[in-house]
Each structure stands twice: as C-alpha cells, then as structure tokens.
Length: 446
Image (cartoon, rainbow, N blue to C red; front, side, top):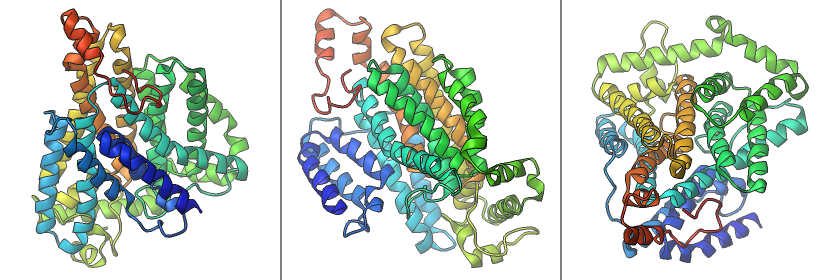
C-alpha cells in the first residue's frame, strides 16, 4: 500500500516537473535526502528513484527557458574539478571497479549541487530548496526524536537502511547540520504555525541527536552551538532549548548514555577511537606511497588494501576512513584533498560576501540570516566530520551549492531591483518575474 501511495505521488508531480524543472529540483532533493523507497517494503524498495526524477528534471530543463549553463562561482568550479579528479583517481585506483561505485554516487551528488546553483536563482527558489532539505531530513528528526521519547532513550536512533545516513553517527551529524536550517526558517517566517512547527522540530532534532549515542555528533552539536552564539543575531531561543535539553537529559536517556559520552575524556583508552586512528594511519600510508591520486574511493574498506598498506598501528582489515579529511586524502590524494578544502573555503567565502553585501539592508535581511545559519552548519559539519566518513554526503554538498546560489542571487539584477537600484520600469519587470510554480510552499514568493 505504501508503495502505491508513493508511486501515485511521484507520478502526479511528473507533469509539473516537465512544465517547470525547478519543481523537479525540489522533488530530486526530497527523494535524494529522504530516500522514501527505503520506508516502503514492496516493489519500490529497491528502486533508485532519484535517477528517474533527475532524468525528468533534465528533460524539463531542456524544454524550458531556464538558463542552460551553470553560473560562475568558485564553489561550482571546484566541484567540477573535484569530480574530474575523482574520475582520474578512480581510473588509477587500487580497485577501479569498487571505487567506481562511490564515484558514480559522488558525481550524481555534484550534479545535484550544480543544479541547485543553476535553478535557485532568486529568493523564492532558494527558500524552496531549504524547505525541501528540511522536510526530507526533518522526517528522520521527528521520527528519531519521537522514538527516543517513547523508549526512554534505551535504544540507538538509526537512519534509513542502504543510505549514507544509515549509521547512527552519520545520522547524528546530518541532523546537527539540519538544525541551523530549521532555525533559519523559524526566524524568517511570518506564520505562527510555521514558527511553532519548526521550533517543535528543532526540539525533536536535538532529542534525536542525543538518541543516536554519537559522540562525534555531540561534539558537532557543541561546535554548532558555539558558532551560533558567535555568528547569530537571531535571539537566544535555540540556546535556551539547548539548556533545557541538558537539564532534561537524566529523564530522557539511561545511565548507559552518560557512560558512553564520558569516554570522550578518555579517548586515548577507547577501542573505537583506536580503530579510527588505525584507519587514519592506513590512509596516510596510502598517500605516502601514492601521493597524487590516493588509493581510489573507499579503498581502505578493502581487506587486501589494509594489509598491503600497513604501517605500524595501521588497520589489520578493511575499515572506513572515519574522517572526512582522511577519507578524501586516502581516496583522491593530495590533489583531491586540496580541491575538497577549496570547495568548503569557497562556500565560506560566499557566505562572508553575502554578509558583507547585505549588512544593514532590511530588504535582504533574509539572505543575511541564511548566510549566518549556513556558516553554523558548515562549522558543525566540518568539526563533527573529523571522525566520520561523510565527505561526499548529499546534504552537505547541497548546502555548499546553496551558498553559491545565495551569493549569485544577491548580486543579480533582481536583487538590485528590490533594493531600488534600477529604473522603475526595470523594477516592475524584475519583481514580476517570480516563478508561479510552487507558491504553496512557505517562502516561495520572492
């Protein structure tokens, strides 16, 4: 029954995608991050729905009057270069066939991030992209938070099977990244209903992060809180919620949760951390012997690679890199990690430029707030990701694409028209160009 409902929903939106490819982008994001086929148990459970949505979006794009090129931004340039270098690293990989699986998924994610930059050309569309991300990941936040409350935190919260956030640690980091986006929607909405729903979802997200039992997610949450305190001008409500959560922890989770979190202080004696260090040493050994191209995507997962590249204290058997930095370094070498860091640095530069260009401008206050919340998400992800293999996570690369779309939208003529910097006749044209599709989404109207 669930399969039929999902199939009917996707079929009903197909004509809209062909008519307006920006609707396809929103559906593509929703399907990619939510993976609704993993929540059904019939004939759709094994389908890669995002591929078919991407094809429909591409057809609609070719038939539409939308721009046919990706606007220039350093994030886009470095994403493309990283994708190209990933192809080279895979060609020369230790096991090309195995690495090609991750390369294929990563290239699809890069295409999605570039599509965000190409389609999200104004406030309305950027808002819709944020809503799509929030609705998709918010489902697992509400589900996970509710599970913790119902079970008293006795069990770990996990993500959907066969996805990049299946593991409790990875889900925890994704939810930490989600929190600032929820807060952005809360502080920019004029609807009391939306404000209440986003606030409630934020609370359940915090509970779900705690319920993952992930020490890395807890550190990422602390880093995000510090970044929020420094960067945000959006009030103290999220910090107050964090304080309430800390006070409520004894009634939310059992003593085993505190026992696990306490091992952060004695990390040098923790077997889990020791395994991470071994994986990092193996990644470094791969780079020492293959400095430019690394070993190929997920090469440390292979037993024979761990045994062939075995420094003192390295892995005895295949294991994930357990760090976005060592993951990229071991996968794609020194060139790859440089390009990856340049992508993130360019995204940070985009948000900094937006903050500078929108300071004191009430008409672009939404862009200023979004830039601040994007910075909080980036800080939390980069710190939490230091101990997790999530370098190529769809949601994170998508947010990096949003930084480019935001920077471009702020400098586009439509933004200048809103600020009264164009002649009146041009202002009317620009203001009347808002997309008619998707107006049911909160914040769709520019």
